Image (cartoon, rainbow, N blue to C red; front, side):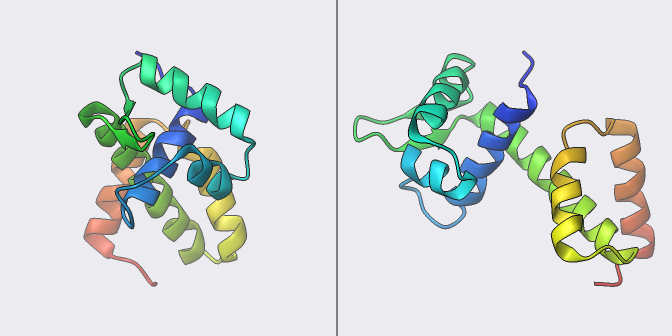
Length: 125
């Protein structure tokens, strides 16, 4: 099942927020992303239908096993690409923004090559 870029952004956000709290609500996601409540509700509804997130009776959002696996991949791409761009001299703000765009489109083959390069040569930062 295909998850579009916006869905991946929501998965990544829930993953990031879940690192600090197990009690994540739609309002937390919206505040983090800067999106309105209706936009967040719609997106989370789609992710629920795709069985990537669930909500408990109190309304707390949780990633499913598959949702968490996908979110971890997206997050890894984001952090490694951000680091790559900073290492080649891009300012942090631009590096993070560009990584956020590229993480959704880079091929697995290219990302794996970048990852192997970092494992072999390390990072400056």
